[in-house]
Image 1 (cartoon, rainbow over the protein chains, first blue to last red):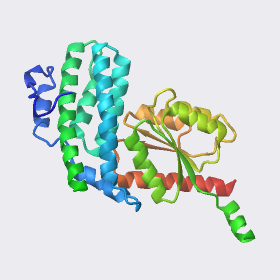
Image 2: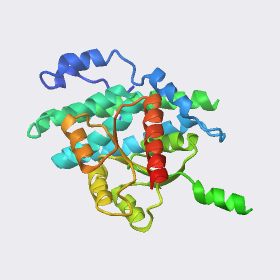
Image 3: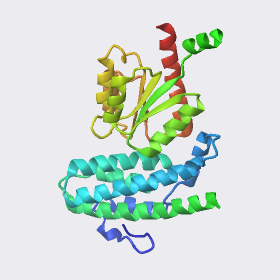
Image 4: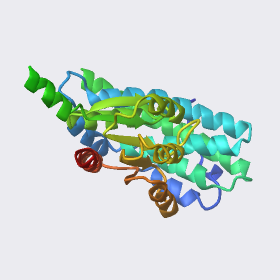
Length: 145
Length: 142
């Protein structure tokens, strides 16, 4: 996985038909903070910080799913790739990590024979996940300070 | 003391089974259930949930993710609907898939409710409140 600061995505690499949508996506934040903060109302009175717990769980689980997606793409295992993308999509969308969710949805719907396009989307997914991870780590730190 | 024991028999803890391979979803659903005074039994995947259900049927409701390793949510619903001791437990399915056919197949398999992702905290609270009430109503009527 690479850092969002180290990697600049080349949109020329995005498959035809995806380019315009992805270019508009990059102008948005990696994490919808407003959506994430709505979960504060599910906070229990047990001294924990639900948002921090959610971030910690998401970062570990999502990193594993991104790895599974990358490995499935390398091995051209369509079923494994689709399952991991599906799982990552749901959790990401719920926490407001919308670009990761949108990229997973594209992976779910792409033609399974087009492995070159899959490779580009996986690269883009890693980029978006790195951006989200940085943003979430900053939120986590602010809440713990 | 006798009154207390009688009260416990009348109103046992509202236990709910939650099965999801996504730890974020498990935490969200668990918190909402705890807010509503429920006791939560957690399964990390479909096979784990199946093992729990084989040994334990004392649940007011169940919440399953549609897509899980080993056994999917739909498999669990079909199993529960085929077992006398489990068939009355209301089940809510959660899925990232918004396909109407999938929703229909959940209901035809025996799901009581279907919650598509993404959902808001209010939607989750409301869906779970309805599910637990349904479970309590079925228990009272039995």
